[in-house]
Image (cartoon, rainbow, N blue to C red; front, side, top):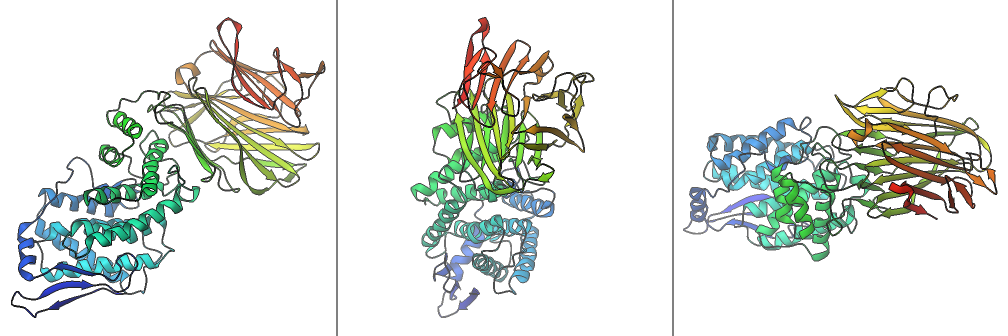
Length: 595
């Protein structure tokens, strides 16, 4: 229902000024009794209540906002935030706020509910105006100011009626905008009641979009930075208003803070965010610390703020998170800025998004393999299922399974070594019967990453001006003189692995050495002979590989079609998967065993 300003002059004081709001979930049917008399209003206008802004950083409204798409909006809100510090002429800026606000209110006020096409930039602009409401007092006409407040209230109402708005736009306009008005104008009658009703909206959005650990559903991964930034701003306002979310909602919000930290890329943006968002800055880190109550989260934030990141100890906040509900994960070795990490989004059968990084982002994009059985493309049936996960002092491990047409199963194993800084991504394809299996998977290179190949060997490097990582195709012969049609090559700014086999199964593993110094050292790898009942087992049934880089050496085994009591490299094993490490003196220690 449209809000309207109404002035009554039935007293010697000059009458009351208030905004009537009809039945509306969030504002209830309360009257926004802004000021009880003109005298009180004028007194407020003369007082110029001004909060202290940040001179070093831009407005908090810019956290994780795309700085290319929203360039104009970000410039405006950064300037408006400086109004509070007296860096600009307040009367001229107040006039600009009114002009821009009136234009947006006029555009959005003609429809019964807010258009679905409203942009993030427009939402940020409206929030910037709402944050400056108290600073405009005394620098503009009373009628202009009250008209602006009324229009902002109306927009928040209409946003709440349109559930088709993009999630961050809905969050900013239907939730954060009315809360900001309450925060900026404590003179509103029933302000606390209104703010409490907005708390219930925040709780509902947290429950819908996050799991109990604060991890976002994959649908919201791309917008998670914008949503989390808005929740943090709302949480800080509620704290200053001495209000609080319920215990469960706050636990999810605090969990979201930890997930923001886990998803931080080396450049300060969040994994899976698109475009060119503003990176996290010191003001955001400080705000996260201020909001959080968990000492483990505070400790990580303190180290980030001090740029003193060291590997996490056992009792610290776990650096990795895998959410089956969210169909996504981030696996990290530790909290260090240069921690090896891999982020996965397996929510869609049409694609499998992945990001691999250390101190720089290396791989970013769709890493869904293309598979054909007897020349016929094998299409997904259903969704990826998480069939095994492990997180301990040695490794972060996830195994996902997807059913394909032709009675075929795709298993994808992702294993990150925490201390030894390597990553293994291995795809296993098992059709219903012996067949020709053709496999192709592309790993798109991140911006600024180049590929480099050896002349005689099949290993490749990912580099900038210096080598950042080494990649070994374990199923391919090390030397190029070996006869095979399988290949690992760079094509169209992507690393592409191609393998084929005639048989019951195919295993396609890649070994990423994410330690740049070690990647320059001598290395070798071999496919090992697997035996059962004193006879060799063919590679379409089970495979084993040995990898050595400098003095470090590992071997791994994978059963494809069925398990058996098998021997390889002097080891006897009956399970499905094993990764072990050679210690000094010839001792073998298992990093992970999947029975």
